[in-house]
Length: 393
Ligand SMILES: Nc1ccn([C@@H]2O[C@H](COP(=O)(O)OP(=O)(O)OP(=O)(O)O)[C@@H](O)[C@H]2O)c(=O)n1
Ligand SMILES: C[C@](O)(CO)[C@H](O)COP(=O)(O)O
Image 1 (cartoon, rainbow, N blue to C red):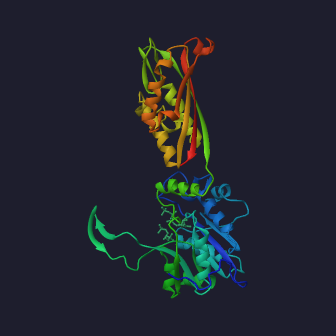
Image 2 (cartoon, rainbow, N blue to C red):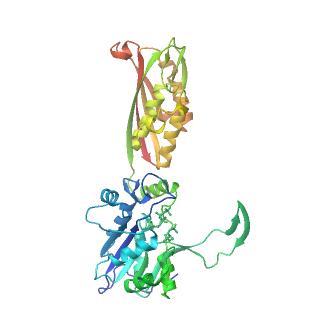
Image 3 (cartoon, protein in one colour):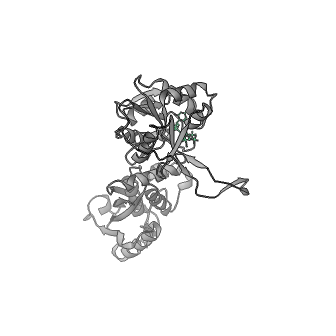
């Protein structure tokens, strides 16, 4: 890998560097209702994180984002108003060409970067800029450290030598005139700009990339990127509340916080009507700002009729972990005249602890009457209120 003799993050005075961030893809492999670069992680869109990295870098003079032809509204809500944008094309290389054509006249060098790489460290940008002082092209990469095989139909066919192989990253930096000419001469279909540059005979230096510089590509990448972003941030604390009510109907027991409690009447509901567990589940979804049980398990869907509430709670707990948080504690209050909760509270805490994979010491279950006032006082139903606290894992 090239280690320039005089690495310098700040370009020479005659050099004017633009960051060209390509973000016109559809993100089909990542899934979701909107392209991956507009999905929110750690409080803002993937693309906004990416843009912020380059805007904050002293060696970058100008920034242009290439967006999908129909993504104006998404880009407007994802990016600060003063970030320059231009429409891209149907393939990555078409988007790069559109961006190169739209750069300001005084630009001499360009850093071409995937909008889907929101974690690019400053040091990687520094290394590319430094290598551009002595090369017309420079790009970050990592050596391959795992063994490589060729395989087919789930079976290994043969080992493949890994000597001299690199995993390519971005930003890939170039002399602007040279890369414009290389793109103009390229037939299309290149995976990246280094491929385009090589066909034009440009000398491209390899500088050291970074394991954090991941490209959000598959559904699991969002949580991974969010966890990595959270590492550099002060501890994040999130609180959520949940409230639920179920009315009494015929029956011989109620299920509360996972425990069957004998009672002359049962609770009615689409699922097993565990009002306490529902309130806790909603508190967890609330803390994540991910709606409520009804959104994840629509009552209109017959598959959830009579479903055990622990299915909902396990899902919410799973989402907490996927989003890079852990549960600090939950507190649930059941509001009813009868049955008496006290004798069952410990069993309820244990039942919740087992489902949530949490120590019982982080779970509180308590109860109150409403002094015979209101619907709970008239014993028409049971209400539950819950609070959950999450901290970044
Ligand atoms: N027509 C395209 C295709 C891709 N890109 C950008 O190129 C980068 C790397 O591409 P990739 O990860 O393959 O993104 P997508 O093409 O969006 O993903 P997918 O192949 O899963 O649809 C992304 O920031 C993407 O937005 C682009 O600007 N214009
Ligand atoms: C440019 C690139 O990010 C280099 O690793 C990559 O080639 C583009 O993404 P894709 O997944 O290969 O489409």
